[in-house]
Amino acid sequence: MDEQMFNGRTLRLLSALGVVLVVLLLLSYHELASETPYITSALRHVPRPTKTPESAAENTPKTATISTTTSSTAPLTQPTTENVAEEATTTPDTTPTQTPAETQATASPTLDAGDPDLLKNATAYVKAIMDPDDSTFDRLECPRSDSKRYDYLKLPSSSPSKPKYFFALDFKQKVALLPRLMGSIVETMRFLGPKYCVLSVVEGHSTDGSFEVLKVLQAEIEALGAAYHFQRSDIDPSKNGDRIGGLAELRNLAIERLVDNPAAFAPNTTVIFLNDVAICSEDILELVHQKQNLGADMTCGFDWTYVGRDPTFYDVWVARTIHGDSFFEIPPDGNWNSAWNLFWNAPDDQAHLRKHEPFQVFSCWNGAAVFSAKPLWDAGIRFRRSQEGECFQGEPQLFCKDLWHAGYGKIAVVPAVNLEYDDEKGKMIKAAKGYTSQWVSEGGDDERVLEWLDPPEKVKCMASYENQEWRPWDETLPGVEAR
Image 1 (cartoon, rainbow, N blue to C red):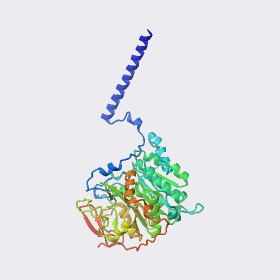
Image 2: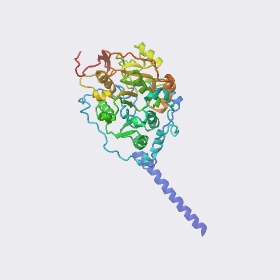
Image 3: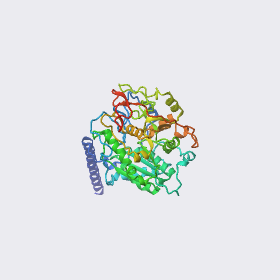
Image 4: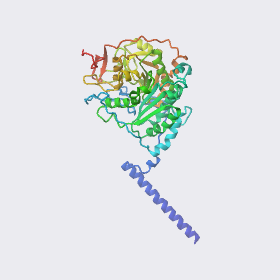
């Protein structure tokens, strides 16, 4: 009798388990067929950076004719980044031009709580951001900053000075990069003095946990003693029919607190505007240092992309030499076969590049730009799209053009600073091009002195690869006659 009862209970238990398995199988099938998550939604988490073997990256065949892009890096389709301020421009549009004052930037007045599942995993990211020794995530390794070289940039904690370093960032959908990017920003603020630093981040409705990490990070940044302005924007440059205008709005949102409240900042405030790049604290400090050392109005690094075994300079649509030409030649068919031959028609620039010495350019952005706040306040310069009759170009190039027009044309690139757009490729670019500290002197006394030149008479306009022409650098600007 007992054996029969046992067998009966066992049979009922097995039958129940069978029913459960059938239900799970049906749900899984329905999820695949309908793309409606029943099971996987409960398992969702913030993804961790994945490591691609260097050998696999090098052996992946890719076409030599490529499409690029950073900030607004190309008239044609380019290798895209996910940053809200990093989408490529495809073709010229005819949307009516808006000046910065007329542009209605859209940001969420209040932040939502975030996704509960993603919030649970945000803590690990924030811990890694705040602790440079945290090894939870496989990120680009960075050396500690050289205090001798950059020590003069600090303000003593007893100084009554107002904030003088304004960090700006537009960010979307790259949570894996945050431990390195935000970690380097935090390390730089600690070095410079947190009370003299302000961080402004505009996030673009990420679904990968970026919003949740950046939101939770606020308490930690403020606990350091730095100010943190975090907002979310509905602007999507890829969907509003005016991509450059949308990118300009996002950049203007990131500097909004600065331009609207000049009295709250030191008169010599420096803006540190970063793309979604794998960057070290020493890279940031070197750009700030060279702005000071050279007496520059703006300094930029060099950003790179891998479309094959060797790195290719990235921001070619925006960057122009002091002679007005692109950093490498792109023929009308759009191929980048000459990307290896940087500054092919500017031997002096080529020599400075080989020596990793700063040199003057007409325009740059290149993943990271450091510039004075004065032209924002005194000349009202903002990021914008092209005006009617003006060469169609990216908002960073127009920003540089407006700097020149307002008398702030001391713009230089710093070849010691080399950046990529994710951790794994960042490791590759540091191995290929070197860390900043490998090229600069230990102390802060650089002998390099630039002889600042006037702008070129004409600059290459690249509205599309098929339509390249030389046009006056200052066309359509106020008070400039057509020529």
